[in-house]
Image (cartoon, rainbow over all chains, first blue to last red; front, top):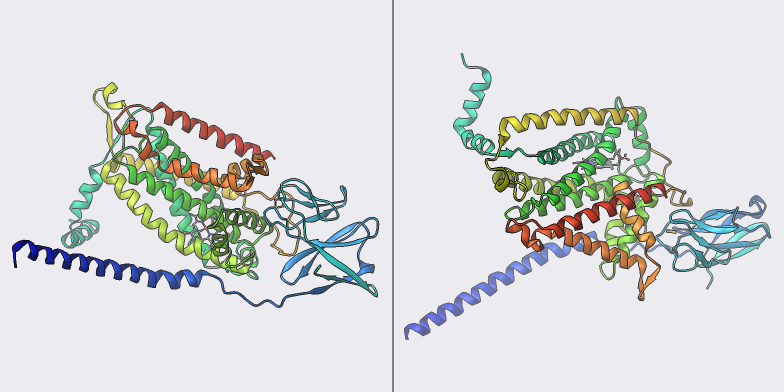
Length: 151
Length: 358
Ligand code: HEM
Ligand code: FES
């Protein structure tokens, strides 16, 4: 064997060693990091998909008023307009997630966080909200107000 | 006769060689010039951080980090626990003074270009501590689980969620789910009392060792014009002045905490409408307010996202200043950096005022 080939073999061995060490370092880091990252990912809870809810007695809801009701885990706003119509929308502002309210003075749906405004069909008519509010269906069964998904 | 202290010193010195340490402390000199006053703000920030650690640990003795108990536990602290109201008020006030002191300290370093070679790492650790300080404020804000904090956290995390690609996973990570719930409170609690303090302690250690090792920087052009430089030893002269100032800060803090006890507000209700007057803490206001002036859509990009990206870029550039300000590294005055800094100060102050009065 000449001297240069011996050197070459040595070098190759060193390269192989580097690769092995580097590779196992990466593998080690990955095997520590992966479980941690996965742990931090909150598990999906199978929520019972709510299709409809009872929102109270019609006789107890004032004319020209709004209230927030629980629709599963999400807030929904139920409005009785001054023309005696019942309307329901998701109450989560399409801007940055605040919960909207009914503004009696202006007769609109209003978000206090950044002055977002929606009309009583849920359309975004002022302020920063980029999208309309999703509408829900409202039914009345003998004085009982039922809200259900608009499918 | 030897005092007990001398004996104790000797006992430890025999085992761990304290002389080295004393020399390390004693070698630093603080330059005296007309900008010397700014050298005190780092120390004030440090002091306020120590107050946060102590008062925070005290709060932990009674605080309960859950959706059903958090608000009530703070009510308990404020009404039943002896001096509970004071500890909480101090923690809340010192949090704000801490950010204020850190910001002043940061700008003074920026304008005197003290970040220039060889102090780049000191600057970087400082900037990361400032970001962590904001993280402390944001996570701590939710802990009382009141209405204002609940919606401010919703908005804050939703903004993070608007960042393209990485935003959504980050939002879920911060909230511990899709929505702000008790899970979010648990996470913020964990960040606030464990993760952030741990990281902060490491950064602070590096920061302080570097300051001690490298000594204080002098303003550019100072040594040429002034001839012989006046200095004062850090130990004990400057340290004693530091301590005097700490005493003053402690008094100011006590006056604020006693005369203006921190409010608790109304308990958060995820099924109530957002009340008027939702605002982030004052040190986030300038960003929050700027977002309002960006149109809903700019060149097909959603205005909010554009704003977030611009702020991200601005913060990144600011943090990297030691690496793009080459002139200061060579000891030349860099006017551009100064003007950029002045613009940033004016911008932040103006938008904070606009946000405050809005
Ligand atoms: C190791 C250090 C710390 C610990 C153990 C700690 C612990 C706590 C605890 C238990 C609470 C809940 C009680 C309450 O809300 O009154 C809290 C709240 C808070 N913390 Fe800290 N904290 C620490 C450091 C900091 C720092 C450095 C800041 C700086 C910004 C900070 C800012 C806040 C804020 C703004 C609140 C909300 C205060 C309120 O409205 O009641 N904390 N902290
Ligand atoms: S969250 Fe409703 S307007 Fe911003």
